Length: 216
Image 1: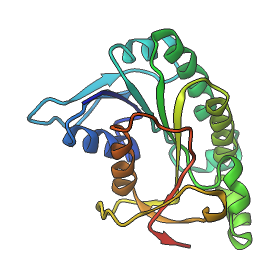
Image 2: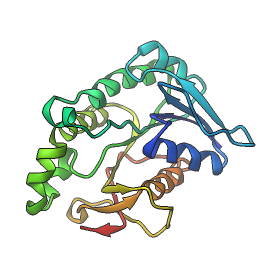
Image 3: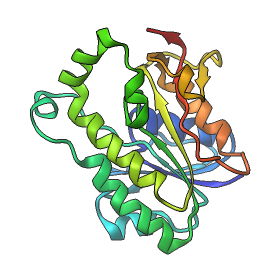
Image 4: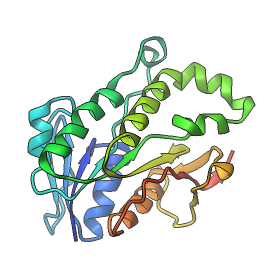
């Protein structure tokens, strides 16, 4: 089993991945500003307080790690709609050179349906509300993806659809090819299950799957 660093591990998909990976037997370091985690009896889940935009914090968090899961999020707000979002790209510009410096070669990044080249797959009826509400965040996620794709890492970019807090079902769909990509609904627990399965693979394959359960 591997040592995993989850960047953004205190909530959302990051929290779900941290818990699922620890339950699967991996040693997990969950990095967040607070460092808070739900403790496990087997102590496989370690909280790490750090700032994803701070070089020193990120380099310390990478010590002894084999795979990084980058699962950052921003809180939905009017500010997100009105002002540029830069967290995803800025954190990636910190993470990539830190991984190179520390010799960590594997990165799983969670972005979302509508980022990068899957933006063209957005249903025309969904495109206007998507751009109005999420456009600035997804512009930055697209930059994040581009930075990762240009790196020399073994990477996997995971693009979930609309996220819910439902339980894991193991009945989600993995849409690997561009002609398959479409929006849908999926639980954070199902996305975490997919990512956890990939932790044991020899290579991440430099792929960009869309993950949904119910299509929209």
